[in-house]
Image (cartoon, rainbow, N blue to C red; front, side, top):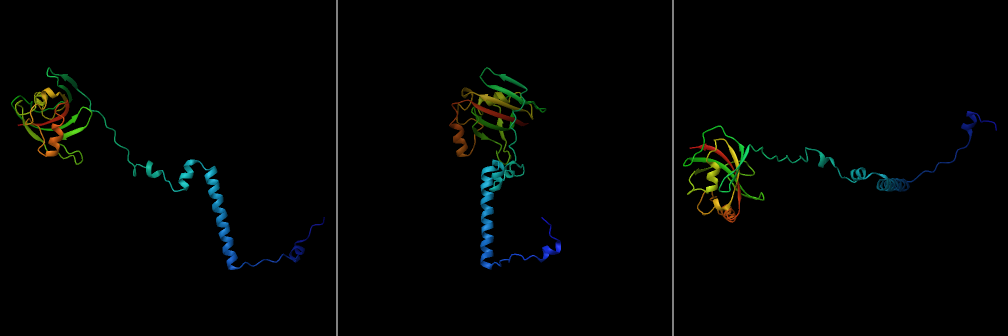
Length: 210
């Protein structure tokens, strides 16, 4: 077959072009958009991995993985224990920080911060606010007639600045409702006195020997 020249191709009649009305143009655009949406939806649901599909529908894992939006919880590390001692009364003492200041002796007046918990970790009372970190230290006489005997045993021999944790059995605990330390507020006081018949854990920091 003989090839046609370029001039001949230009002279060939062309098929008439159909002019679309505005309505037909809008319908055509709508049909194209609809088909495109159906193709994308179908291919996304069938072929895309789950992660990409979640991103397509609007789920953004960056909000949950980025430390700016979801900072990890800090690790709660147990303090190192210097030594553990069990007293004849049944009190068990863990030395956490050995202070550098004056030593507390029986009969002294001391200023302390403390946290009291049940053996299951349930918070009972503290001189340190759990949220703000502000403290309201208490002043106690190291006299078993005024404070619980077990706590006196914990404090005697401590150096100022030291920290101890102790398990105090009820036999040397709140045997009397008037023994210190005890909260002045009704709610915390009632909470503490409801646990006097079980062992309690005290974490104590000796601030001053007065």
